[in-house]
Length: 279
Ligand SMILES: [Zn+2]
Image 1 (cartoon, rainbow, N blue to C red):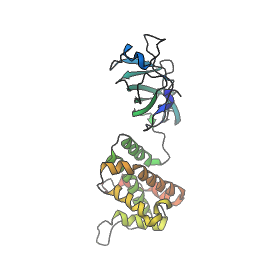
Image 2 (cartoon, rainbow, N blue to C red):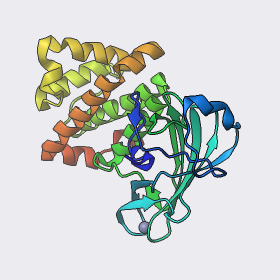
Image 3 (cartoon, rainbow, N blue to C red):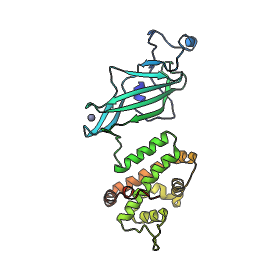
Image 4 (cartoon, rainbow, N blue to C red):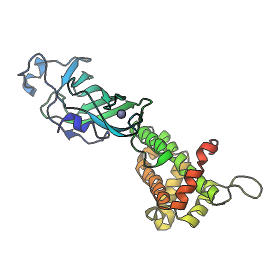
C-alpha cells in the first residue's frame, strides 16, 4: 500500500505497513538497514522527497456544487520534512478539477524508523484548512453535520470536554426542536424552565427517539451517558465515552430522519440558532 492511501484514512492508533517511501536523494541505490544506520544521519528539518503516490480526499466543492475528489499534484509528488527519525511532516495542497483548493497537513509516525523498508506507520496528526469554496463531505445530518465534524476533530486532538460539548449541542438542539414543534412544554407553570432530562423523557415517550440499544436495561447506559454529556466529567471520561456518546447522538438523528414528521419539525425549527443561550 502506498503511503498516500493511508493518508486518505482518518488518524488511527494502529500502525499499518506501507511501501517504502523514503529514498535518499543523494544515493539512489542506497538501501537502509540497521548496519549502516550511521551512514546517513537524518537531519531535523531536512526536506525529503517521498515516493508515496497521490493524496486524494473527498470534499464538497461549492464551485462544482457536488462532492469532488481533491488531489495532490501528481507531477510534483509529495515532500516531507524530517521531525526525527520516526516522524515526518507532510504538507499537501489538494485541488479540485475546477481549481478550488484545500490545504492539508499530516504528521506521520513510524513504529521504528521512517527509513526502513516497508515501514509500519500511522497518522499522528491531521489538519485541514478549508476555503470558502470547500465544505466537508459529511452533509448527511444537515445542519448538525458541522457540529458532529467539530466534535470528531476535537476528539482527534484529544480535547475531551470540547468534543462532548459539540455532541451536547446536537443532542439538546434536536430534543428542544421536537418538543417545541409538538407543543411539549419547555417551562413549568411558574415560568421556570423544566429540566432537559424531563423534556427529553417526554419527547422520547411520545416519539421514541432514543435508540432501543440505549434504552434497554432500564436506560442504564443511557443515564450514564446523559450524566457524562451534561455533567462536569473529567477529560478522561469524555475521551473514553466519546465513541458511545457519538453513536447515541447519531442514532437519535437517524431515528428522527426515519420519521418524516419529526424531520420536518426539526428543519422548520432550529432551536440552536434561535436560542443560543440554552444550557
Ligand atoms: Zn470544484
